[in-house]
Length: 311
Ligand code: GLN
Image (cartoon, rainbow, N blue to C red):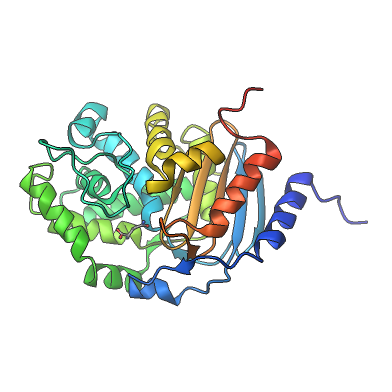
């Protein structure tokens, strides 16, 4: 007789088959390499803060992490420079604008928050290293500790992103103009393009989310990826700014700190409890995975996980 299927696994499986029917949204094509994704890919991975893994669908399919790298690089900036120095450069107010908005605070040129590109590029510039190579090596290594396995950059997505990244370059030079970036933006822009092109799977996202849920220690390897104190800062900006112009709606309906990326990933964290990774490439107009949003909304509803739910 086979072992009984745990209820969490059963719920995820029925959610997965239900949401497979949803074919709304479009795969991102503004970075040509991303357009090669199969729109049908769909994986859900839930990892508890003590390392139990539940997964269904395409959880081992590689894709690039894109903007989901931002909260982790923000964590590295906090580690490398300390909170005060980081807040000198990057604020924490939701902008209500698109991810690639040239959203700088009037007068100072300080990016509104580290989840939009302006703030994320600034966070990358604060990673120890000085040159592109050392910065990206540090970023890849730390993201790998969160994931519990070594990660690497997808070179063809990186090239595609760098060749078409004119808007991000414009943001970099604006930041240089306001002296938020203190050096020529070239090195940190290339590191930013590379960090977006780090290859992950849906299972990695679940594990990275669980590492944050577990206070910065990967629950399976036991290795610390980020100081416990900074996890609170990271989850705060994810909570208020992680879903771009849909951040308010997300908190209202899903109620978990989260971050999305244009390749179709979403990573959500319930502090102390669990992490969720979802991957499906069709996006809504804000650039968030349609199935990903629906999955998180349903998981919150079915398990009663909204952080503002009064017990
Ligand atoms: N690489 C992307 C960009 O900067 C990341 C955007 C995203 O995932 N929203 O354009």
